Image (cartoon, helix red, strand yellow):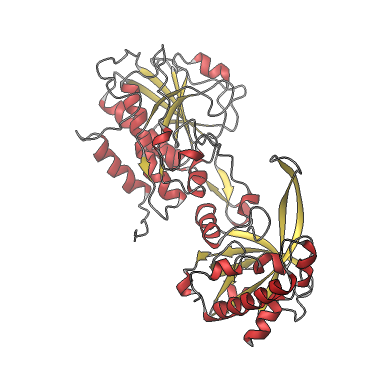
Length: 479
């Protein structure tokens, strides 16, 4: 079993990086930089305008600064562009500088805070050459054509994926959500037309993604590799025309090559919605991965008084089947037996008319088990699909789905339609402080109705939520 990764501090990682990057063994095997020591192209001394924001970009700036200290013939000056500090905290009373802003101050570099390049010109100082290369890493602001054309060598970008796969602002998140086992870093030119549309100059070798990796851990794993890729490419003159595009990535060597050439769009609030039902309904394993990668998931629910509130689910975990509470196993076992009898009586459950006849499946299961089962009615926005085409429609509809849950101590356990059972440790109800899940869910819980009705509407009811997959869920734990 892989141990959870311990996340070191940025300063520790940078210190480790500095000792590694200059060692005789340090090298990034790239599809375009191998063997370039003999064909190194001559470059004018570089006057770099570095644009960045987060910890990932800090590694590249630190590497360029270290190279400047050691090799002034390659890099003569570095100026830094950051986004302006943003108000944060309760009441927006704290103004927080970005990690790159603080690093640039530590390195005593000139800093320019910009939210737009409109009307702005790069610095021109006596005795210092004009900016001739722009480097943007995790910046988020498009560098305009006029600035790229004014710089002799244009612009470069370090991107944490093996381009052209996972173009976009969130490659780390989408790689983890897809369950990728390998990734890498690419160096590309800055396009005058769009983000991530430049020429790929070099790529790192494959980087294995350890199981259970979080976004910060993957970022810190790739950041020093990207920094070394940038510096080694500059040493080799990869930025000097004529540019030599890297050979096409050998994606067929990846175990998950069938999912190559994807985009990595920005993560939105909608992506963090818990998907209980519909075409994108999650299994317990999927739900836990989304929580680990995207942060706490949310869903709307109905209180007993009919008021709708938003709940943030914290500490969501996929529970191994041998750790399911006895109440969950007993309820699903008896529900499965009732469901089988219903199916024997009414035939295939694919007929919509049958669904109404088995709405009381869970109520029957609870009655047969001699237990009182609590449920919550969740409200979910489900994306509708166009009929007769695989193209998704932007239209969404709201549905309600009533799902049983089981309390054990401070936690609650929720069996899911697509398989498995999740544990929720804490819940933050909109407008309230975070509480233990069992306590926070109480105003939203109702007893499972004896007739199987109530608490569900639209196309998804209790039967859809749990009855159809119940036998598959139990295969691994029931005789």
